[in-house]
Amino acid sequence: MKYMAILVTLLLLAIGSAEARAPRIGEAVAGFTLPDLSGRKIDTALFKGRTTVIYFWNNLCGCTEQLIALKSFVASRKGRQLMFVTVNEGQSRAIAESVITANKLPYEALLDNDLAVGKKQFGIKVLPTLFILDKQGVLREKLIGVVDNRKLESIIQRYL
Image (tube, one colour):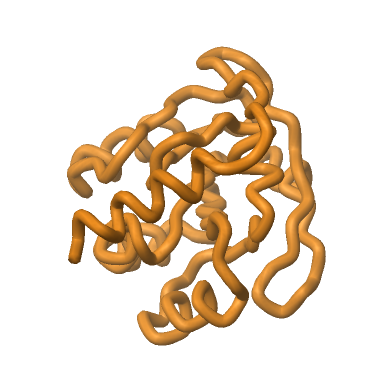
């Protein structure tokens, strides 16, 4: 069953038009606007001045466990120096909201239902994919797949 979920996720990401060139390490990352779970439009350009983690995910990729495991790390740093943004790829608001609320996750949760941001702007091919931006909005790290939580926390901590 787990392999089926992975296959579905990969197929979902493969569908659609050609993706844009993914941002590269050392480049400024353009902001984007997506709706949050309440439908309010959130502009990520407003996050400059804080280290920002953009975590592209859906509930089929094994990402939920990592989001839960990172909960206390993110909550202890949220609002001061760190902005942790989850972008749900290709799923309905109901699915994303059920994961976020059921697990009381302290994240800004955005919805990329048509994959316009993940696939076209960021060139996402595998979920999860994480982008870590410094306080000036420059890409410092790109991590593909589930990363050991301690390692991920250590990487994020470098940029705070």
